[in-house]
Length: 533
Image (cartoon, rainbow, N blue to C red):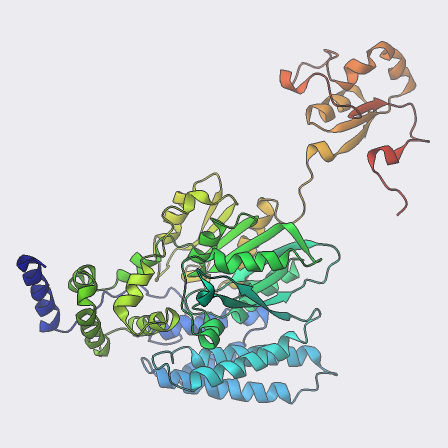
């Protein structure tokens, strides 16, 4: 190492340690009409729970009572309030006779599961805390009880995935939710993000999709709650290794239309889903809610300039970086979000070194991948996004306007928070309607698959120019008038109508048009039309 370089590092280190490290405060002033906590991070998470009310995930006053018992900046008080609520609601659920009152029991079990997740949310700073595991077990117990009471019970399945080598193979827990309608149906594979569980996805978008006749598959990969706990695996950037086995499984199910499989990612999942779709091209449509182009740069943004400089100086200063960061996190003035984000980052990326965590996150950008996406992408953005401002627009621009629908959810509509929490009904309406706009919902019927019965000349012309097959059934007088022009009528070259382009006229394939005088004995089987039903 050059002495000048060493001197500059010593200078940076001394500047960083000479005074407390102050992290840049994110612009996360809530636009909600009512503040649920003076702690901005607590407010957001409470609003996140309230967002699940329309889809059986929580109840309003239960969350508000818990909120009243939480002290700003006090992670333990957050746990205490929600653990008390979860325990109480879980006991109520168990007391319900599921034979006589299955819906009441289901709703109550769902709420208990949500509250257990909330009780766990701010505990990741201590990996050895037994509550991190016991709360999760209770959450899974309650959620499993709930999905067993759905009209079409949810089915848990464990899939196998290949890593870079045998030692890095892993399993993927999924839940299949069938909509219950006949025939193969459109299906959305839904994944959460940096901190969320697949179970939350049922309430976030899953139930809304099921209500619209769309099957749902939720899943978790490395770094996400159950995989992190049970397999001790942190996030991996090659997210197609997670999604491809889920697609493989989906197409084996008779309920799933193989050509109508969507992929949705929430929050950090708004990076993971597009990243997977850049490699897994069986995906018919992508929902990125909200979109993220560069996760690593977003994580570095709130760090003070001196600490960023030390980080960028390289791994030889990793220990120094980690120690200075630890001092900064211990400062009373450091925001709840910053403390939690570092703790969650270390946990979900399975490392005890903040330097290593941030180094890993730099691999999570769409450089070299955005241009490989072939499916239509809906990119959601939040006008007041406090965590990844500007990232959704960058993602949409880099993928390109031919494939991307970019939608900014507005503050005026109450949907301006990150991932539009607090406005889930509106967000789901917009996102799911976007799938229909790219013909994701029902199978597209191409013009060449249409057979039209027409009696008029202009009708035949219109049908043929649209590329459809036609059976001309003219009035006897009209047929007599054009007896010698039947071929010209069917290939739209009579010259009677001066519209359309030249390419729309001319010869046609066999069986793409014929003339009949009556449909009384028409050979429908010739066109594969079955009238028996």
